[in-house]
Image (cartoon, rainbow, N blue to C red):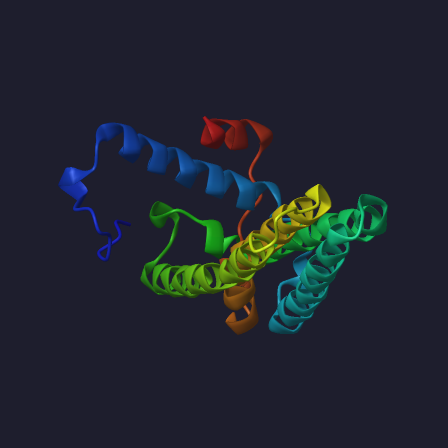
Length: 201
């Protein structure tokens, strides 16, 4: 479907952008079809919320470990790397079990899903905007010194990456937390390999 709340009218969109949206829609369908047979027992509200809590814990570890980057690289690299892998793994699982609604293009969503996605993204943008003030404040504080160790600048960059990653996960977490138990009839259907390849083109 077309997004009635889009800032750009449908007739104002260039043909290249329309083809890109259609391609994203096919990719989204192929992703759901590819993972349709996986984690079927996890497709319920209790599992959704458990995964969200696990993702929050992993993100908290990412942010805490980024603080050690101000001290030295060996202190933070192991917990930061472990928590980063955990975040990406849990985020992928959430995308599979929720049908990847937060990342879906307009053409792949109905009106209710589209409204939920847009609302979650709006709040995610607010979190991103607010979180950016933290590394900015750190950099402003560092600028008051005549000499700033390179490790502190490095730590500021790692902190910035951690906060951006957290904000990016917000829409997926919001949609997963409030998502009701889906009807088994609404589960995506696995497609043959040839059909999935056609969707991805």
